[in-house]
Every structure is written in C-alpha cells, then in structure tokens.
Image (tube, rainbow, N blue to C red; front, side):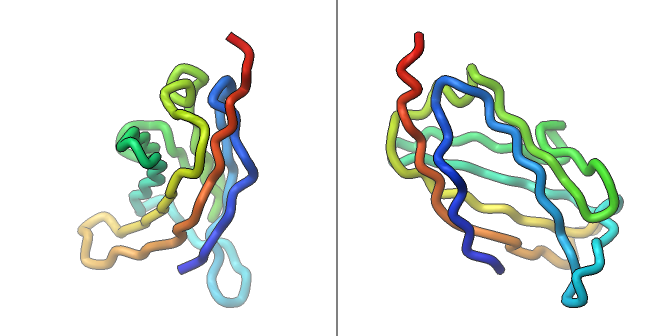
Length: 112
C-alpha cells in the first residue's frame, strides 16, 4: 500500500487523474480483469466514488487507469482536507488490494 498526497483540488473545477499500477520490477500490470474503486470523503461525510463499475474510473492502457469527477461533483466539497483510498480486486473477489490511501486538500475556487 502506498501513502499518497495529491495536489490540492478546486471545488470549482473537475478533477481528472491518470495513474499506473506496476509490479515490483516496474512492469505495468494487466488490469483488464480487475475492478477498481477510488473514493474521496470529507469531514462532513460528503463522498464520491469513481469505479470501474460506475464508469468514472476506466482502464485506459496496460497498467494505466483514469478517474474523472465533474465540476458539479467537486462543487459538493467544502474547503478542507479529505481522505482518499484506492482499492483493486480480481473478478471473483478472492483477493482485494488496498493500493493507496492519503489526503487531498480541497480549496475554494471562488468562481461562481
């Protein structure tokens, strides 16, 4: 599991992120048969999930994935620190891996 700290994100903009999963030799892992979920949660209980099931997290290449939250979704977060987590599991759920956890700061983007 990795501890990550994301760059600050605005609550007045969408958030797209591209990441890669590799093995210990830095070779990309085939994610085509895996499911993934990324979640962000603030202190007030506001929560967003991007997953391979809801289409907000997509596998875009060997070992490479992308999540996307819209401006409207990000607008629901008050400024402050949020917790994040990313999990991956195989199709039959016999193995679940917590890939990362860590904070992301949400800033007030000011623009209406």
